Amino acid sequence: MAGVLYGIGVGSGDPELMTLKAVRLIREMDIIAASGEDVKRTTAYTIVLQAVPELADKELLPIHMPMVMDREFIAKYHRKGAEEIAAKLEEGKNVGFITLGDPTVYSTFSYIEKAVKDMGYRTVYISGITSFCAAAATMGIPLAEWRESLHIIPAIHNLREKLDDEGNYVFMKNGRKITEVRELLKENGRDAVMVENCGMPDEKRYNGVDEIPDDTGYFALIIAK
Image 1 (cartoon, rainbow, N blue to C red):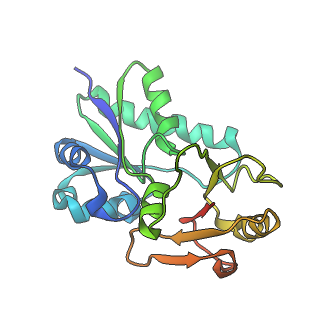
Image 2 (cartoon, one colour):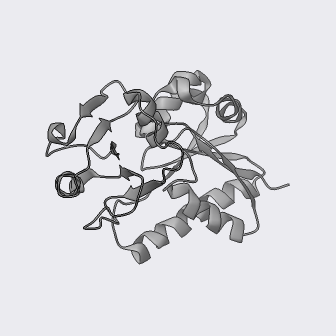
């Protein structure tokens, strides 16, 4: 029988926020895959290793994904990664694709999963704690209350000039767009908090738009009320 592909969310950075199900399945997997040229150098691997020491003895499968904006170009790598995973599934091995946060939220896994499923293999999503939920908890604030809406915006792909929808905003994947996001918040009269590298040893917290620096890493998440 063919193996099964699992997309396993490992949370935002704190290994204690990994779910019991994620820990159990990672221990049971024949192979652990992750997006990157070297699985051991990925953030997801570093998180999991702290909660599941047995990971060090697992067979690893790196799935190379260049950080580019060309969707047609990256689609070739999605297909190649899916084929590499399918070859392992055909051997009857179960593959756990570890991914930050939750695999249903802006995750490379979703593209890989679709291609593998189209090849006729079984796939499963295993939910994890999202970065924006963890960041809100870290800052001690609710994301949404009563009738408030919550808008999740991938800033690097979809940054609009106005924040005219009612409710609260989460800006993910800010990176190179951080200055534009900060100015947008000021122009729209919204205050915000930011957490960088949430749950990781180098976590940083910022209270208010004026505290947000010009230079941040990829894992900088903003919550605007």
